[in-house]
Image (cartoon, rainbow, N blue to C red):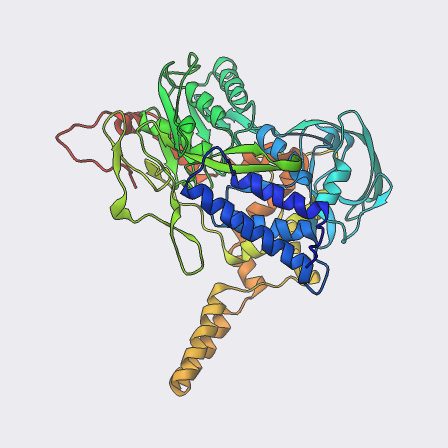
Amino acid sequence: MNRIRLPRAAWMGILVLTVILGVRAARPSGTYFEVTKHLEILTSVFRGVHEFYVEEPEPGTLMRVAIDAMLDKLDPYTVYYPESRIEDIRFMNTGEYGGIGALVQPIDGDMTVVEVYKGYPAHNAGIRPGDMVRSVAGRRVDADMDTDELGDLLQGESGSTVTLGVERPYGGGMLEFEVERAKVRVPAVPYSGMLDDKTGYIYLSKFTRGSAGEVRQALMALRDSAGMEQLVLDLRGNGGGLLKESVAIVNLFVPKGTEIVSTRGKDEKWNKSYTALGRPTAPDMPLVVLIDGQSASASEIVSGTLQDLDRAVIVGMDSFGKGLVQQTKDMAFNTRLKVTVAKYYTASGRCIQRLDYGGERDAQGKAQAVSDSLLRVFTTAGGRPVIEGRGIQPDIEVETPFMSTLMESLLDDFAVFDYATRVAAGLDSTVVPDPVSYRMDDVTWRGFEDHLESDGFAYSTESMAVLEDLEEAIDFEQYQSVAGAALDQLEVALEPNLGRDLQLFESEIRRALEEEVVLRFHLAAGIVERSLTVDPTVLRAQSVFGEELTSILAPVDPTQQRDGARR
């Protein structure tokens, strides 16, 4: 039988997969035989599909599906990047790209500017959050254009120019901007400042190249120019990044030579220990670190090691629990593979990885946490117990503020974003609202309900979903005669009622609207500055300094039992 000659793209896919699996003839073993065996099976199936399938399949798509399905059996951090997405890796590592300095995403079919970075071309040109991009370099932007395609049009070499056609809603009309692209680096420290006359605050949003330098610069400025004597370092929402940056940030607060983190992998070359290499900038400054459920990876190295060394008090919620280290490797045809190569261990020796991707999966195929009974307890430098396998548990827990179902729906539907754009358009452009003291007046607040109704906003609640399940159970068990009237009353009470619910959750929704209006004039830093005055976690952190901080970090009396996490 004559064999089909596969297109070059098909063989490229096979080559990519071969490299990913890392077949090396120099390492013959049982594992090597299994790898080569299954590669041959995959090749034969791939060839068979092209030879016999009734339609003409697209080789690249088939192989991408095969690669993604294979990696999905490992962990969510092992990712294949085709040549078209190589720029994504550079941005993740450096936070830099050539572009205009704006974040654009689709809202109701319109490519809308949702954030503008201060001091970059889009901001300097006068582009605002809420503006809708209608054309780029003469090319029409419509609902059929995806964000990747638009991103390719907006990005380019630093110094090159691009013309944007923008529609400004609520009376702004059509505007045209000629913007000179620049090297955009999204700051790792979007805000730093003083909470009071002694307490400084630094918000670190990510661990990209140079993050430690930004933290050090902010730290020195607050200490030397603003008189800071104690610091709150905020890592909430920080999903991590470069390992070496986390080591350098811990080094700002601990002596040279201190072991900060270690890694261990299948290959001995990944068994490494990272120590503080420089002199600390603030070795004795009282320190509180904030974390939440989105603080992961490098954030957990910083918070976990500072906790292990009894160098800082950790405040907030349990962190995410990602104790895995990734490296990016070159693959065939200019593709890349970000692959998990090791686990990391904080200074006490604990690994904070929460999910066991190599263990048994649940019925939906998802990885599960290791049983509590199998977890080991470690101790901090002062003898406090800390547990592995559960992320970083704070010394002082502060619950995340409640968010109503209506608030979630308003955010998901971009209703808050849209109304804030409308409010900002109606404000006197010569009077910029103060980021902290701005309050929405009652007339503007009451107009929000009319705005939502005119836009046809609708929402559902979890309570109604549960009630529907209850009604089905009552019907099945034939209790309608005894429960029907009560159910009717309950349905009336729980039925979504926009006017009632806006009044019920007014303070929460009004606060979100005010923050969005502040964003239009003061960008992301304005929102952070505003939130600090009401943020319960920040306020609790401020109260820790003094006797409570000293008590928590004091060495444990070996004759007494103490809990590792204070609730």
